[in-house]
Figure 1 (cartoon, one colour):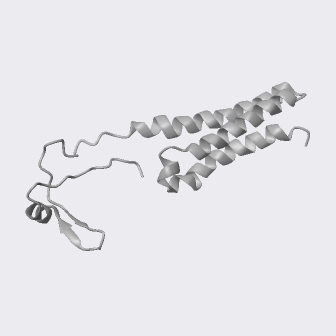
Figure 2 (cartoon, rainbow, N blue to C red; figure 1 turned 135 degrees about the vertical axis):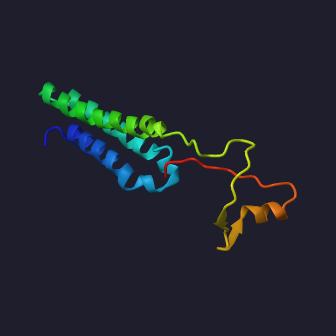
Figure 3 (cartoon, rainbow, N blue to C red; figure 1 turned 90 degrees about the horizontal axis):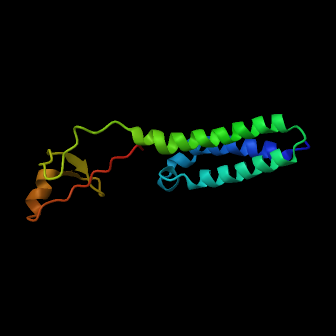
Length: 134
């Protein structure tokens, strides 16, 4: 294979795209900010550019490089822009609004209600709502 940089960059860009959804999405450190995939895409882009520069057939290598970089651009759009378009949570309580009573399991596996927590703590209870997409 004469132009291994071009094809390695293209395969690496496909692998970087697939690896996020197949593996890195499972872990919060790489799901929230996909830094590993960004590093893989940067290496793939460098290889693609080096492959185009070495190529004898600039048109075909340019097409392959464009496809590899387009995968990178689609990934950036899908992970950063499209995930911000989540629907608003109209049913969530607002600041200062009384929270509805609920029952959840604590770290020991015992059921705990909000009313029991309020009864045991005279100062109140702080509720933190994480709105995520995991």
